[in-house]
Length: 163
Length: 163
DNA sequence: GTCGATGCAAAGGCTTTGCACAGCC
DNA sequence: GGCTGTGCAAAGCCTTTGCATCGAC
Image 1 (cartoon, protein in one colour):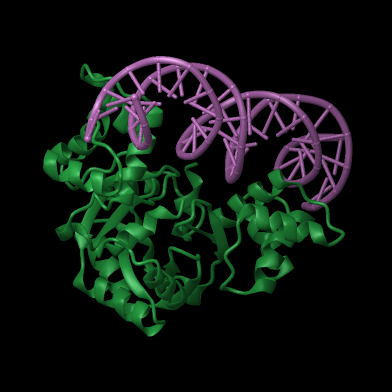
Image 2 (tube, chains in turn red, yellow, green, orange):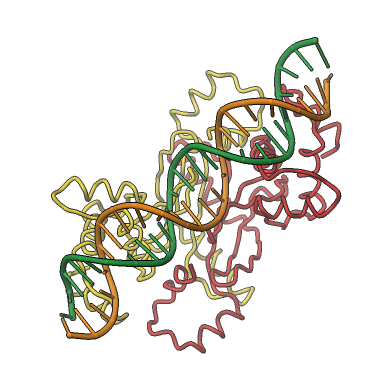
């Protein structure tokens, strides 16, 4: 989103364009649509430059940009909220997460979107967004898992043991 | 799960059957498969009886039972972890959540499971679980939303404003 | 110049952990 | 009886908030 576009979106809500807000959004735009950053990571990355931004402001900006629909909050496994750039093409995209090492792949699926829409309309809901989280083990972790000789065939167990 | 079954599952892991663990699991079994409880709620409900259980133990039991695959951790919108009973029939079930009032409906979908499996196998992952979260507005909130004359057609915005 | 935004530090939830005692096996 | 589990209270994250100052408009 252009600087002017961001400014006017903010003004519409009676809010202001500041350097910090711009930098947070730019960071996501530079990294592209497949980055999932935590507040802490955003803070650290922005600090690396000669930029000055406080963690509190990062939190405030992330919330603001999410409420404007420019970022999207994710809820993956490992107990930390993450954010990603939200784009039209990205609206219905899903996450395949390795519960052991955190490796994340994205994918899209028209079938999933359709299933979400059917579910929403059959209950009279209006769909806002539809996210499939697939928790899994990646190839690397699968082989390590084997090495340890897990005591049970109940693989799902692994999903919660690494805390 | 029977008392004896629970005991032997615990013993297999070198752990013990205690009254507290049993009560936590029983609570979920009594409430049925569609209850989503937070740790705090589990604690309060168990305290109502003449039972004595500490919040710390509730947390420990929830984690333990989840790692055994008997409970399942949910990640819905409103910033609190919740748990539900995990059953075979329940393994691939999805949530339709109203982002405004929190009303939650569940549904199942073979299409979604299949999409998850395809995504996992195409990356060489082994699927553990597959949860679709559909964020939406329920009929009641939809009508209220209309009353307020929202300033923008970007409905997704509402998903994050109610914090 | 006004009013919103920032930075700092302190406060706030929720969750985990250390330790002594209790209780399952 | 040994060793795991519990309760309590304290500590730990992550996130939000109060307040003085700064800066966009």
